[in-house]
Amino acid sequence: MKIEKRFPEKRVFITGSGSGLGRAMALEFAARGWRVAVSDIDAGRTAESAAMVNAAGGSSLEIPCDVTKPENFEKSLRALVKEWGGTDIVVNNAGVAAGGFMDKISLEEWNWIIDINFKSVVYGCRAFIPALKRQGGGHIVNVASNAGIASLAEMASYNVTKAAVISLSETLRIEMSPHNIGVTVACPTFFKTNLMDQFKSPDERQRKLAEGMFAKANTSAVKVARHIIRSVERKKLYVLTQGDAKLTWRSKRISPELYFRLLSWAYRKGLFEKYAGLK
Ligand SMILES: NC(=O)c1ccc[n+]([C@@H]2O[C@H](COP(=O)([O-])OP(=O)(O)OC[C@H]3O[C@@H](n4cnc5c(N)ncnc54)[C@H](O)[C@@H]3O)[C@@H](O)[C@H]2O)c1
Figure 1 (tube, rainbow, N blue to C red):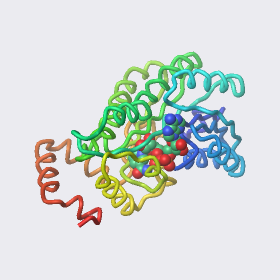
Figure 2 (tube, protein in one colour):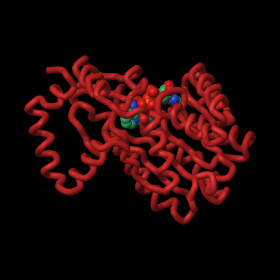
Figure 3 (cartoon, rainbow, N blue to C red):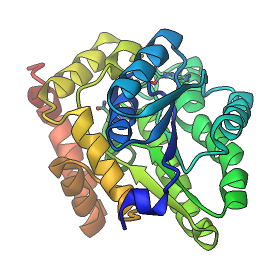
Figure 4 (spheres, rainbow, N blue to C red):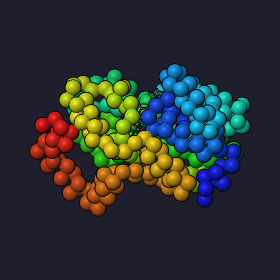
């Protein structure tokens, strides 16, 4: 069913939509004539996205929201109810990235990434689910990452937050089904955005590895955004946007033992560094 038929009021709220994937999703919805609530920790970027949404054919609402603060989600909901009577789709997209060896990642860095990447999704779901239930339905999109499935080395904190988002989304997929609330979790591999701007790592090695992987990325945020919207339309739980995401998904499920043996072998041989252009 066309997404506009399911949600004729065409209202969407997107966290972290001042850049990258969030902005790309905002513009895709705008091009389809949606009302888009853009929201980010960075007010300048939020305003920029809002202007872009209006120029692309949508109608924007700017909502400042630092996703590490649960009360901001309550405020966002109140603003949406006041302006539009609510929202149909909630996209928990805001996120940051990090790398590091497990024995070197500081507890501060763990707390930082857990707060932004995982607890924010908990806050978003806790604030919006009661409202979606009251209005008789809606859709939650959580932006995780292939990292939550692939579990690659030297990315423990990022992997863990994204695996948690996948698990929460799977649980909600079942729990929300009696309430006509769909759930979709996006698990893309690398695509080019500003994600590296806020990248944290105890040493430069992981930054170089991540930058190398980013440089190889041949998918755009627009493509990923379109894929996510198509998946919402089809009420799909998982969004595995790129070929390598699908390959990881399948091989890990067909033979998890073999998957980790192969990856450990490739890691010992330095194949990831070679791929990222470090060797
Ligand atoms: N780019 C990739 O390769 C990739 C791959 C897989 C998953 N993802 C996920 O996609 C999502 C979007 O990232 P992106 O690649 O577009 O990066 P990006 O840096 O371009 O956009 C992220 C946005 O989140 C905002 N943000 C950061 N902290 C925030 C906070 N506390 N409150 C509110 N907003 C905050 C930033 O200001 C920024 O505008 C993230 O969850 C990321 O983990 C990205």
